[in-house]
Length: 113
Image 1 (cartoon, rainbow, N blue to C red):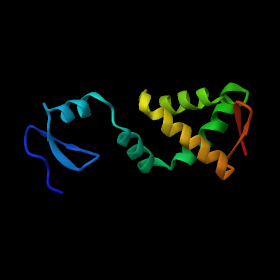
Image 2: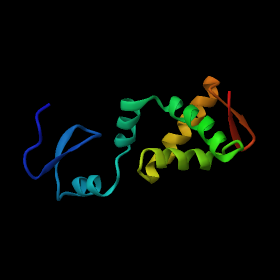
Image 3: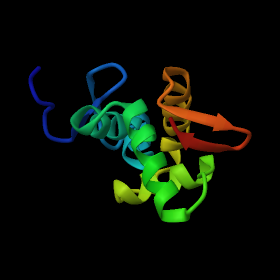
């Protein structure tokens, strides 16, 4: 894939080059991309691994079973980025970890398997 010409950026949804000062280009610059979260995950670990590794660490740190909020805050701090669009992806990672049996959900809290 060849790079975009000056004054244009690549739209990740369509893989086409769009003007930076156009409607789509401005929205791409303004809104944080979910692709950054996926790149971090693909580089370091899978989503279910991320959630399952955070639960034992939080249990040790908090002294009790962590809630979904605790897990999100731990992941945000671990990757040094607070991004609102990461929330649904983290929720999906927690759900996947519960389905895979990596962590156990008891009410609103989670514990390591």
